[in-house]
Length: 466
Image 1 (cartoon, rainbow, N blue to C red):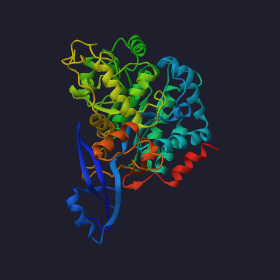
Image 2: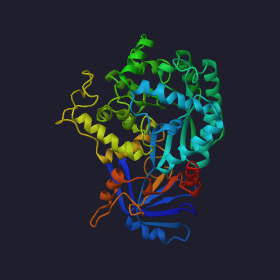
Image 3: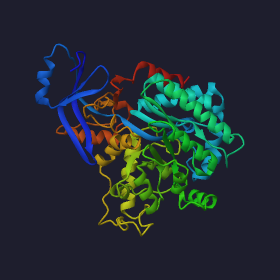
Image 4: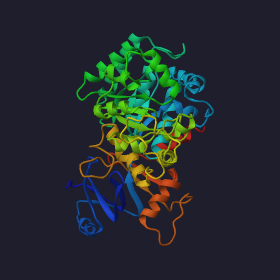
């Protein structure tokens, strides 16, 4: 044990497998000075550890200790108009709201102000790990990476690529996009910060030419390990039709990415609502993660993803806020809405039954379909997201050897939206937090063993109100 290890005592709740929670009442987590979990112990062992003169003891009393949330898909620049423009479907929404807003990030001063607020808000809400889309602008995207590094969030950041079918005020040449992507990757890797990593980010097939996609695939493959890849896939039926018209030589939307070298074990795709069975087989066989974004799927009228089918077929699934298609920066919202989406599928209102070749076709009937439980949704928001982002060995739960990315939850904080009643079990309180809680209950946010919910972070948010 590290001579300066810290013993955090509280009620520990984390996911060991899909639907399998471990609850340790008055248990403890031993964290080394390097932020790595050394051991997790039950209450009976705590007294012995407390006697050690070489360990720092932090008794959190009635508080819960849970893993930090993993947001697998979020557009950082779109936080500037979050909660507005929810009346349009995807393609119209992009043209009316998203593209004009993202064009403003050409100005680095504007970008710094907006990104500081956005990152602070996500971290305050318990998002310890986020996979960010930025914009096409190199300098502003570097600023986003610098801010994530500064506040100590675990961030995967991508400079967006767009060289076709984009407005004149938000488009790149193919050569410039390739050059800037290489420079951005070098900038992030040059920080040598294990918490901040680059990700190749073609916006989606309609806005990224074949030449550019091929080059992006080559950039990803030229590193060891490969640079991660993120994008959108099969979010909207009109989008899918458009991709089919643009790439008749490919067997499917997913196959377009595959033929350009963009699908591999370190890739993850947002939405995937309308993927056929053949596409899902391809994604599974390539080891691609699926980022389920239920708020956005509802808000932009895209559809309800059949998550149970994805899980039954062996795909990796995590959750994403998808701000600003999704109107909440909180992963608690994504968790809640993933359960609602699953229940919609169970009553025949989702994307089941659209491909009869699937061995799970017909699973969407009320009698057969099992909607997500709160424990399963929590798994997707933590372990599932970590696995999708190739961080499964690093974060997601409290297994020894992983980094201590954790939230300290106080259900009794002043002004809490969660009421605690006599006789409530720890799981009762935990469920109430998942369904009723918010950032007021998130007292501390640890990333790699350090509390990042500091006065500095609060000041960053306060500055946005001036």
